[in-house]
Image 1: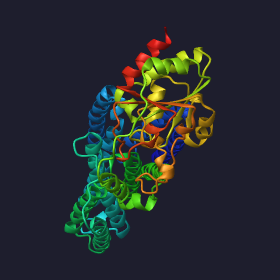
Image 2: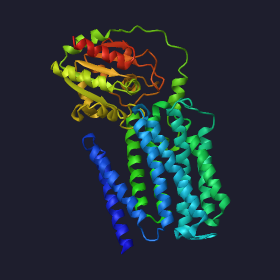
Image 3: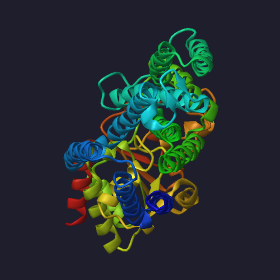
Image 4: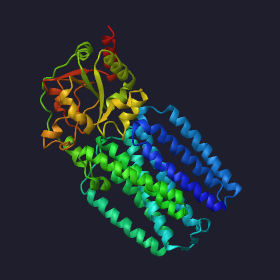
Length: 469
């Protein structure tokens, strides 16, 4: 009876997790999705603590772990800046991967507790699940650590490449498969740790050739890896909920990665092999001699305020520069003032704007920008030709027309926001530096573009002050 109740609770939690994913698919239902996910996790935790066979000492240990982890998580969540969310997510992924390795090790050295056999005589199927869990978990851990270091600027965000890198990765991948087969055949402890060490090295090598411009896809793919690691360990633990949850996270992360790859014109195969971004980074870095200075038109916040005050349709394009400057609140204030002047305001979101999927959506939601004013690339692109003003704040590569015209460009083929089609383009930027891809933005030199040089927040504040006069 007790086991049946536990299974039923796990089923309810699984349904809630599915509803959570459904809710998170749109900004208007994301809060509800979060609530479903939290309720589902609460049910899962309680059901696990009350499952048959749980001893009091085990419950105390689990509760202690929850208290420590919950406290750390609460402190981090309350102090984290929105600009630091991508590296926080990468750090969380690393912990999931490390947990998978630890659980696999616990199951290997104490199989009786998991009901998978005895020391030296573990069931073959469990050895397969265990080896896959530790391999994927270790790759997720080391890969996420490198992603965190790049996002946190603890190491260079530029691609780190060397001759024969892809062949080395391929060789290590083949060797990893051989070790897994040998481990399943022998159950050797030495092979178990060789798999873990080799997977850690492979995770490191897969992520270092990836540049900062490709980090949104990296975060998404590592999310998928962490899900598959959890699912593999779920089989080892014979825990239905962990299998379902891990599969949901793994599948949704893989689908999101595919969408992100389309948004960057990348190959999903290259993502899996850790090779994407290397050619782009190399092309960018190897751009040769410095380009001669080209004239640009620059203006003042007052100029921008005057033109936008007389505009009927304005499309705002936020990017990572907005996040760094924490300009989302004043940007929403500017939009509200322009709406009072009779302008139609829309926000255009590129799928890889920022450093993680949905980064710009989260920042705009934090500033209470109405969801109905926020539009994705495919939806908003046809409207740029009808816009009086395109207001670009901190975005760069995702607005570069070279992606459509310059076949030698590192970003050629990447879908971009068609801001150049607006009657007037205002581009807030500190200087003329290129974006993460290392490519000069052709939009800067268009006749209809006016550069507004300076900090994104300060410039927008000055525009707001001019609008209020």
